[in-house]
Length: 159
Image (cartoon, rainbow, N blue to C red; front, side):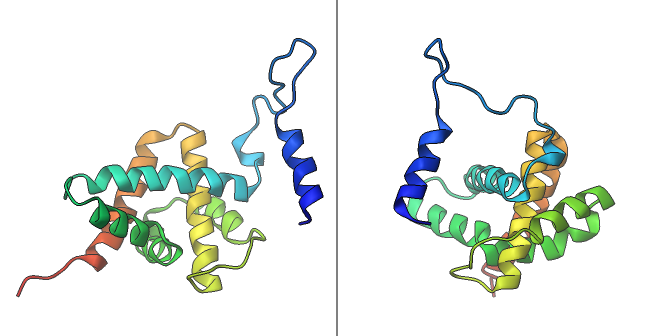
């Protein structure tokens, strides 16, 4: 995208109405009608926060360790592993939300395979949908299962 195009689009995000207040463009949008990449955008933030809070159960003194584990768990590779573990617990509706996210056209991944990246996008779209629908208990259940699946792979086994 060219710089001028990006500036034009950015300028259209926040507009003022006649009263000088921020103008809302979307009111009462059906979550099911939202673009899957928007749902993934929200789901990414939700999972990041869930993982960071969950990691505090293990250490609170080593921020560099917290950051390292957080990055590994929320990475596309970590989320793809997590999805493989949680897929059997999903309803058909949740699997369909995942498929919409997975199949969305997105950018090229940096530190994962294309397949892992698409799976993680589907996973994030699912979490974003649950969050925006205020299905907090189901969101917590899936996030916890995903966290445990990846954390177990990162665990150091004692001899």
